[in-house]
Length: 289
Image (tube, rainbow, N blue to C red; front, side):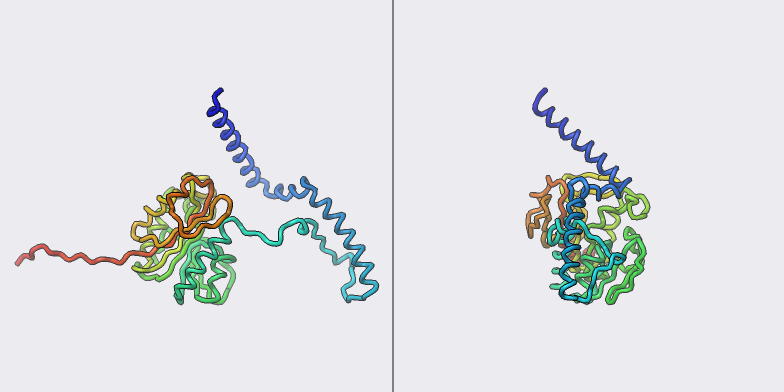
């Protein structure tokens, strides 16, 4: 057997195993915490918990802190001592900072957003501008400076064309039309959403947009992954002001060439577009008299 055939077979087996693992995680999400039993963290945590318990009781008897241990109130946390001081969620940490910084610098009084994280990018923006959030799912929270419109963003007909100064959609459009969030199945839902975004933004208005980038494919019903060039082509009413990317190692690269990131497995492309001015054409044909 040739080396090329062995390599292809190896990739095939890896893909089958990955698909099986994803399906199992979707069907039985409660199995994921079992890793803490497999790697021994829970058992080590139990030992450390009782050691700390005994140490606290002994010290508190001497100093009378006012917070004595009562067994009925205990709340054991067993594994956090083995985790890092903080984590950077894949893609979201970098993209939310990237977009919020741009909105802040633009000094717009009101910003519109489709589908981005409430506890990430939108929360970053609320201290310095009003945000109008659009999503197909309902929002129950009432938050200062935040307005909400429940809408399928493949059809934003209630918003006037060329009316919005600042608009974003971060890690959202790749899901449209796949049913993941209760939206109707529509294989070109992503195209409709991008056309609608371009329609409602005014000329010279800013669009901050992100989707997974790399080898182009559909991973139903989670998301699509796009070639960066596909996104550039879809935003045919806009100019690209800059492109940044979060690569497969979760490393942020600012203002780079999109053509260098077509082979990523699952990166995050960050696109800053500006809608072109509408040029009125003058009819120079002779008029009938």
